[in-house]
Image (cartoon, rainbow, N blue to C red; front, side, top):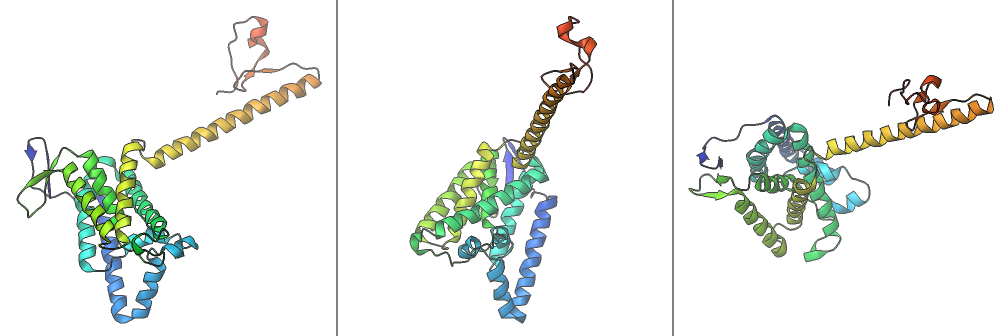
Length: 281
């Protein structure tokens, strides 16, 4: 795939950014180990699948790590190669522009959201689905990257090598969404298609509504804001208690609305203009 912006067109392939490369290597290593385990000890291989694959009934009964671990397993070589290719082609561009922290947050947000969607839909028994059906593969996160790519670079043109034509990214993404919907309705690929749809949906919602610096940054900002507001409330409360205590001992002290001590010479009630010293807010 090649990406063009405006009239500038390049046939160069995207670079392997830091965490895209690491994720692909991790997926490859786990796939190789699992293949060896399947050849040497099939019972152990199936135990690993039962413990790490996404099985909705097991998730509901407490095995919540499966919401992440399922994405590190692949059932066939082509399954792994196509997911690795998608991660490279679409993830590298996003990691380059967004930075590593936001890229990883987005990727695993879509991965978990796809898993939760799969769990929820499995209990509807829609199209014969069952909570006992396992799901594996990184496709939920990959589809999230795909929809983000289409939204961020929608007017850019991509060429799907070796096909000799170009198409705008947004139309390419709409085509993938259409095929995924048709496959889900026709049950081509079974329950896994609903993981794809979950990745697409929550990838769209993230890009559309999440803060530009990412969910983690926004959550940390909110946490520190609430923490600081709590400390300010405690300081004001302590100041009021101290005022009451000192009045009981026939002494008059004053604090401002922030809980800062007002020295007697600076008290506005003594007509000096209300300058403050003491604690800094």
